[in-house]
Image (cartoon, rainbow, N blue to C red; front, side, top):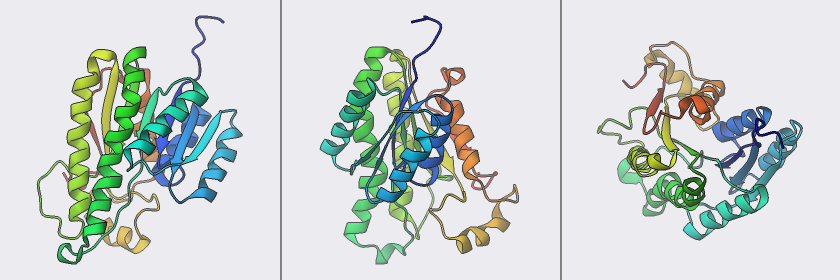
Length: 249
């Protein structure tokens, strides 16, 4: 093999069947990556992802896995490495969102926000990190939320907000731990993006508060992720990209 030809890199994307994760996965496939995604409920979306990504020539894999379970997260990472030989990048796009008044929150939904948004990130990152350390290369990208770097009252999304604050702390800790091995860990914090996770009327109501004067697009998140996954971003580590059109700063 020509030493100048780099093997196709491999991305693992929990939450890759829909929304931001799907958009990033399709973009990576079109730029020479092989892509594995994980989903919990979106089987039809996952199947269509495999078809579309496969049309680019990428090898693809879609697995049903609840990565809020540590054993399932480890099995997912192992299955991806078995299929493709390694995991070069983890893009954690899993995690539900819901809006409810704090005192009407249920214990089950409270735990769910942490299990799926924060704990799952730790489990999958822990599972892929040893291989990245051994190869002395890796990229970890996770999603927080704009304003999560501020300690502020969020009575309508309290559990989700706290979990996303935790994502930033966890990612900075991963960055410091893994930097000696050539692995980066960075966060993207969207404000209001038309990604399918928020209702259209909610986005419309917020438009007047966004200094940029527009709602963000999936392409904005894709571009930020593409940079963080690139060789050009090898010295960007522990960073948080605010993707909000200057809202929330």
